[in-house]
Amino acid sequence: MFASRLPEVGSLLIEHVYLSFLSIIIAILVAVPLGIFLTRHKKAADIIIGITAALQTIPSLALLVFLVPFIGTGKPPAIIALTIYGLLPILRNTYLGIINVNSSTVEAGIGMGMTSRQVLWKIELPLALNVIMGGIRTAAVMVVGVATIAGLIGAGGLGDLIFRGLQTYNSGLILAGALPSALIAILFDLILKRFEQAAKPGVKRKKRSKSRKWTAIAIATVLMITGITVGIMKVVNSKHTIVITGKSFTEQEILVYMYKELIEDRTNLKVDKQSFISGSAAVFQGLKKGDYDISVEYTGTGLINYLKEDIPSTDPDDVYELVKKRFKEKYNIIWLDPIGFNNTYSLTIREEDAEKWKIKTISDLTEKAPELTLASEPEFLEREDGYLGLKKAYGIDFGKVQTMDSGIIYSAAKNHKADVIDAYTTDGRIPAFGLQVLEDDKQVFPPYNAVPIVRGEILSKHPELKEILNLLAGKINDKTMQKLNAEVDINRKTYKEVAHQFLVDEGLI
Image (cartoon, rainbow, N blue to C red; front, side):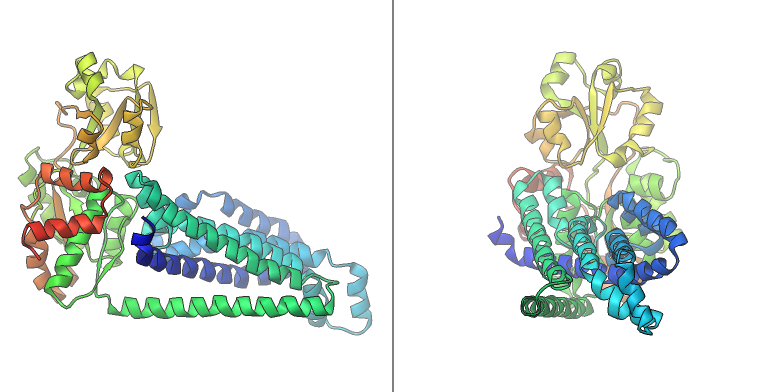
């Protein structure tokens, strides 16, 4: 597993180092001067350090999601969030390191005629440096760990592999992301430990000189890696013309790879794949802001979640035409031809339970629901076309509702950790895990026909994309998509491999 993905792991590792190192540098540039300022204005110290501590208590994912509507997706919000997480240890240690310098030593310097600036640079900072370095060391390890969440908003890094592994219940992918991340954290810690030892007062000159030699080598190595990283990213990004994105589940990733290969095979355009984004809202915000150019969206999601409109009818064509018209008018985002499958929500239970309880529809489930546990991904629970709509239409009320990542809810059902799960009807794990989709007899779930969407500005610049993106129109029905998903989720093939084989089989490349 790891060997076959070595090039991908290497690329994501470079991104991870870039995000972490840049965030730490920014945190140092902010926190150290601020810490020095607070030593001269002690009344403000408790307030400022308290605010910084409060910011660090915000869950990292919540902070990222909060930043997305204002800054967009990708690296900028990730760097801001990581910088915020690195501030507290550096700020606090800078402040405490300086104020705990022996007062008699400071007074001696003043007595020798030193100015306040000279006291700071010649006495306070040298004596506090090892404490400050301890804060930087703590911040660095913390930032490297938290940087894994950057993959959820398209910022890259090793978290991309981890979340894909969670989504597909693939421990190999999780380890391929987690182990290099842990190694980076250890490397950062060892390098900064050298700094801390070199800065410690009372270290013998010879020992300090040797320690400084190693820290200088370490600094040069990290700076060289960072410089190469930035250079590579600039070169790579300069070649990318089209940015294609997708949400964080198997089906979307397969389709992203299909469209990427089709575009690069039939044009001279370069495609930057920034996919596996967590949450529909983040993808939509990125499209509106111009961070992304192409995506695959679902008609029901477009109508209810983005346009905030009621379903005109249960006819898929009516919903598609309305969404297509409104998106062009409001956002200049063009909906092309439907791919051919309807990946709607469903409530799903084990086949053995459906037979035992004689349950075929959601209405049948309503009476039994208070005795059962529902496992669901977070987004489903807060959507009007999801759990909220079900409660209104059916009056359904489960005994217990558990939030889980969509990658593990199927295993929860299979292993009797949950009785009912929300599932996508094209998911290959439904038949593989012996699950049964219940009929939505009151038609709460709208049509979710998958459609490629593209920013109007990009389509104007590259009109040839319309024909290329429509090559999949009508090619993939519900059963075909379910089979493709199963190739990844059950048979452990890669997204790219499955996408490529389908295009070959269909004679599209």
